[in-house]
Image (tube, rainbow over all chains, first blue to last red; front, side):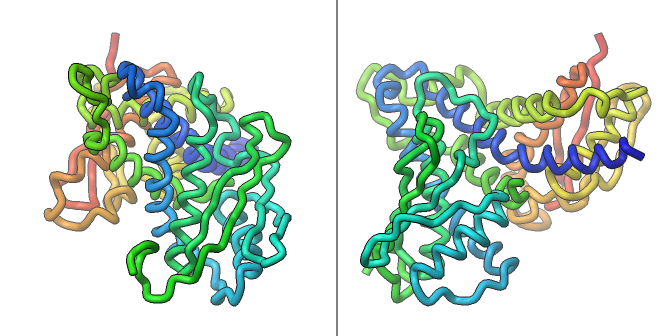
Length: 188
Length: 169
């Protein structure tokens, strides 16, 4: 009886860990790919960042479809509603956590998401010498890609990171503009 | 709890990332352009290796009592039910064996192939979407003290077969 119950819990745990373990293994592999290349090594963080932002973007672009299909969330009328949906619905649905929303700019076009820790790296060991920036970029890319598909051009960046020794993880979201014609940002 | 769809989306990006030759790297003459850490390994082997590490890590995190299997067939059933359930939210459709260390695991609708296409059209793309999972199976088995060779074949997407050959010492 209890063995059955254990299996269910363990299955859920495995499922939950799979994403972060895979992400960690991917980063490790990329670090290895470039470790013998001396010139590249100095720029490794920058190169890996530049890889993860577009990868995250691609994930976000597809994730939004899944989100809209499963969440029944209506159109957001302003950035404040968007912030609520991101923190209370999206983060909860996909990462099982609800960041708090703080530090609104006076113009209402910037806010911070505060997470108690970096959800992507709960128990993953960072390869030596490489900053957590690599990990952060995937999540920022996801946010940017997803919001672009609902006609919002935003900037997302980590301003504090528990991996770097900060007390919390803070993502700063900035509204750039509404995208009018379903064209990617930058093409007008 | 991380939602399962994130893994699937990450897997797609991972295949693209580890597969594409790095054309934007140009460190200059006389220096090998990136990917030097791979040695002679192919992209498929690299993907399999990443899956192997993840499978090992997953296996290591399971409680010991859950892994007290009485016989080899129980281990394979665990892969087909529990591992597949955890990773793909479904069970393997069938498990066959010759009772001499070879097992065929069949999935009639493998989730990582579903978005690639159906039928015969993208058959040659299939291996890159199977390599990680082969490694995952091999890695989990290795934590259970079992050395194996895992390969996959596709006759028509999205159905596929995984072949597990246990290496006896």
